[in-house]
Image (spheres, one colour):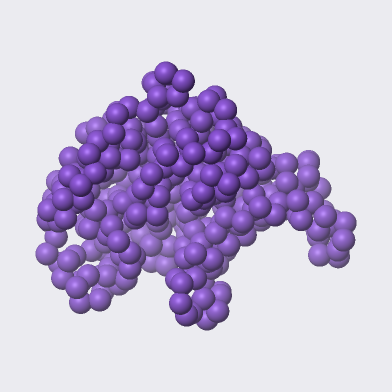
Length: 362
């Protein structure tokens, strides 16, 4: 705790180069030389990582004494505070042409004014950062989802004026699921704007006691579980029927949904008393996976093969969680999946994301 607090207190407060920790990152970048441009069947592919992170000191400082609790206990924390040339070297070492940056929501529990100030700083800084390297960086906006009417305004500003690509949201908002009608105005605005909503979970707090012990279960189990719950509510409560044009992207391969979606197809037949007779879905629950998007952070060729089989190659995009070192060889991961055709590899490496975000392909 003390180390983190000192780290925040001693940080630079202005400009785009946000930290004094370039030495560690530079050494890391030098150890991994840049890789050549990615080609599939001799054709150049623009590789796009939709799942990468950053922080800004100015926003964290508005959290007061809780600021040190925001930073995750993981490798790669200093590199979250982007030094531009350092970040580009790290991307080059992974053969990533473009990152779509996001910030996991840490402000949902703050009052309206504080949360609004945090979001304002972050969206302005993200826009500034992306404008400095538009061919290499894009970003998801932050939203004060605990105040939906304000989130609607923030999203419109982010897309229309700041050039951001969508919004990063949690798996729920203070225990309230996204299917709650209070959030409908936000989803309606996102659908209208064509904005991508990136669901990145923050564990499943209700199970915190059971997650204690070895293995960091709050993350390894809690995160994919939280995403699974969020997506199932969007499906079963009819939210995806209400907003059929909504672009939803789920982190970590969409959690467990892709591996057990068919069970949901049987649920209301087996136990109708646990289903709402006033909600009639337009298709089988598992079929909604074809209108969702999933990052490829499933670690193995078999995992990626299975995800593609369940949701379709057109719905899978590259993701790394960079600078947290979960997946440091994302391109190799795709090429190692022998069941994918060249067309499917090109789609996952960047074509799907380019289409999703309205970007020009290589």
